[in-house]
Image (cartoon, rainbow, N blue to C red; front, side):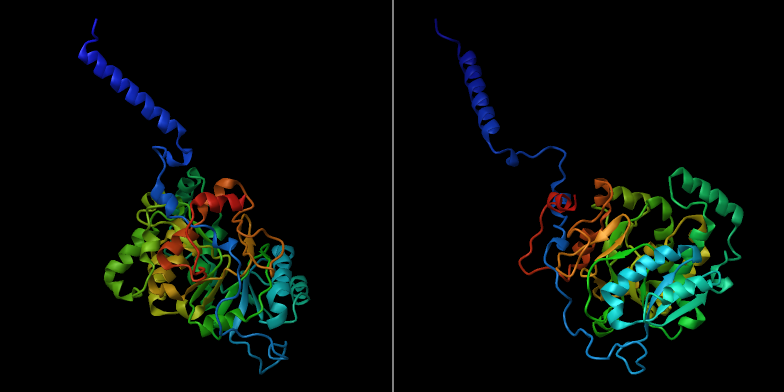
Amino acid sequence: MAIPKPIRLLAAACMALFFFLVVQIMRSPGEVKGPNVDVGKLADMFRDPNLDETGEPPEPLHRVQGENYAPGNQNSDRINATLLSLVRNKELEQLIQSMQDLERTWNHKFNYPWTFLNDEPFTAEFKKATQANTNAECRYLEIPKEHWEVPSWINEDLMHESANILEEHDVQYAHMKSYHQMCRWNSGLFYKHPELQDIQYYWRVEPNVHFFCDVDYDVFRYMQDHNKTYGFTVSLYDSPWTVQTLWPETMKFLASGNSHLLAQNNAMNWLTDKERRPNHNHDANGYSTCHFWSNFEIADMNFWRSPAYEAYFEHLDRAGGFFYERWGDAPVHSIGVGLFADKNSIHWFKDIGYQHIPFLNCPNSPKCQGCVAGRFTDGEAWLNKEDCRPNWFKYAGNEWALPDSASEPVEAMTSAQG
């Protein structure tokens, strides 16, 4: 008895589907894309450039030749620059650790002065111990009270209630008034100290940080000779809850007749990116929360003294977010240079090995000891997602990029970081 035509067609279709499934199963698993993989975001991330061999930035570079950087040499090649540290007497041991690292890797060659600042007088013990760890001049400055105190326009009851809200969102130091004071001072007041008016460049050094790599050129002269405004090693995402009104206030400032202050070649796209961390952009009301981690920064104080940045800081200061939220100097400085400086004047000091727990900058160089090249954190693996360097490279470029280097998926980056 003949099989009806509809049954034959159904059987043929089943056989075709069976052979199709067999072929798909036998294909390489790498060709099968999962439904939830955001291929665009993976492709947008880069292999960590610290895995590439790292040399020095381009010439001109000023080096030690004879006595040209000797301590006490009144005609040395040093320019008006200093190593700058905000530190308390009780942090002496941690500061000595930082000094010893930086003296060993760099400053014993160049002998730039150290400037220590405190909101209280330094002890004799502090002065003796710090001077014993450098051949360079040490200066000990007390912060003027009017620079450190909570300004008169801040409502302290509102500040307390705001801190309660921040605490509900697990924001660190929400109720620590001195932390808020420090963030404000670092953002827009440190360079106004009367005894820093003759200083142009500074290298910020905090207690309990590490430096891993020998640097054989004058970094301050590098900044000057190459027209650099700001130098960083680590770039991170911030907690959106600390800066929820920072970007709206920034937009308000620009809309109030200040848009002409924007640099022509600014980094607005970096500051407003919403592709890699869309929740951050949403919760921070338009700000990507990307910032340069300012516990390390080598910068030109004349930029902070410029009319553009001074007006911007004054606006933020009056808005009160240093106390009603927890605006840090890192996002404030980063937005400042991102908007009002040419992004080509911002330099990644890839060759300076650095650690402030839990993040690192560790280049692949025989000049480095004590860190693993390409490792971004010694903490939990999830901290790798806090790295904002790929975003910076996307919008500003990577000045250290090798001519034949290619982008690789994020897996190549995180596997090296461990």
